[in-house]
Image (cartoon, helix red, strand yellow):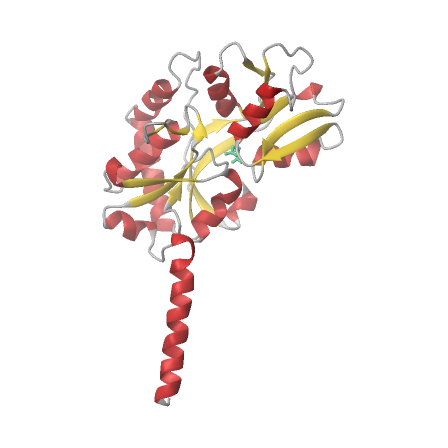
Length: 277
Ligand code: GLU
């Protein structure tokens, strides 16, 4: 190869490397490599009380945060060396695929469609889609009352929004927002009639606004929360599965749920069985 050509090839490779790693702060390093160097970046929700919350003082709290910290510790990373990053529902697969996060713990349902792009450890929690309404509402009592063209809020890229599109599109007007906290505001102000997503998420919002909001009906889907990891990274998936099993076995799993939902009347259900697919 002529020298010019070598330079050209080298420059091309460099440009590719810049595109691969520079764009959006992604990294080529595996989650295992990052953990081995003592640091992890974890995607969580920032606006879901009891699950993933970015508090006013800059701290992070919630069951997903505690699960992430427990996993981090098992991977050799101290909680203070975890950088939390907001992972809105519609952006989760992309954040993992681009290497912008090492894993995601953000009320993330395991689905076959998502498994085409990423892999999941877990499940570490089982819940189901439910409905949240204003406390004075009497005509929405459960999934069977989703009719009459009511305005229903959910979030882009979420399984509950997809389920409404698949099964109830003729009966209700679905409005898709970027986050559930925006739906809660719309519900409180009266611009939507109900909010639908997982029961445990709705219980967090109901507890945050006592007397104003209530969860109605019974859960009408099964949502299995998993930890999203890069597709094909079996090593990290196995290690995270080991950590989830340890968290359940040593009582930390139940303690974390009880701590994060204290005073809400919520009772920790039985833990799920990790699926080593
Ligand atoms: N668990 C559902 C999902 O993964 C809804 C909750 C969420 O959007 O985070 O899509």
